[in-house]
Length: 55
Picture 1 (tube, rainbow, N blue to C red):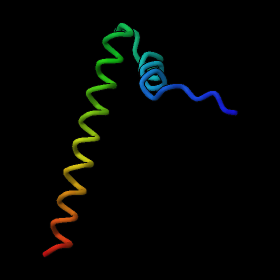
Picture 2: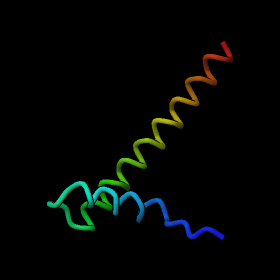
Picture 3: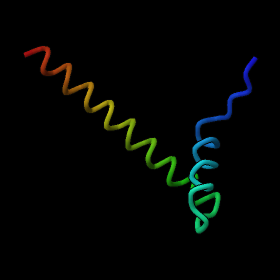
């Protein structure tokens, strides 16, 4: 069985290794915003693709 970290913890930890001026909360907030933006963009892209296929 693999011990997988939750994506938020994993990417927050990775971001914190790249920067020294972020708190854990700031890094987690940034990671969440990027995740949400990427998710919304993916949903919009899929909807646009479906619309094009229906034309």
